[in-house]
Length: 211
Ligand SMILES: O=C(O)c1ccccc1NCC(=O)[C@H](O)[C@H](O)COP(=O)(O)O
Image (cartoon, rainbow, N blue to C red; front, top):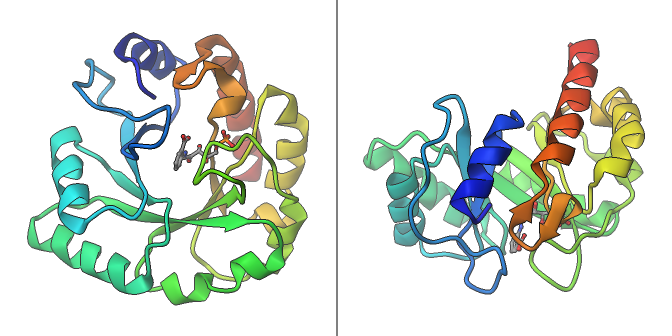
């Protein structure tokens, strides 16, 4: 999210988490002030190979609950970030992203088991994120770890039925969130709140069946 008025409109659509991108090369790069948002709404910050100090500074400034690491951050980096967060009394959780084209791209995830709270599986593409492309979700049959994950990459309103199937399938067992982006945009950084509202309520129905 980028524009304060759009953030307020999207907040009314009822997402659990809203994302801010702190990567200078993204057309969705966020800087400035947040508008007043519901207290229940959590904020995620998206970073690409940022310095630990930068991540800490943004986490504090924007009250981030989740730090989404969308670059080549190593397990050592994640451990160092966690230590720095702990030392400063910050309870933000880490989401480590994996760019997926095939099964092989999941193979390094076990190295992050002790230093990430969640994984996010996005589609490998020419940009770090926001490529608007889907990977074959069946690949996640090969994911055997216990770390809960978010599904991402080119998800749009037309994917509801496929998502319902995925969430109820064995490979969707550990999926705790759907991350959407360009599939719901009118332009980069400007989301269509009406489409999001319908999407979110349908996904919540599936979640109720699942639980
Ligand atoms: O969206 C961006 O511009 C972006 C740039 C660099 C790193 C991450 C970025 N987005 C983070 C996300 O979590 C997106 O939601 C994810 O990549 C999926 O995007 P899309 O394929 O457009 O649905």
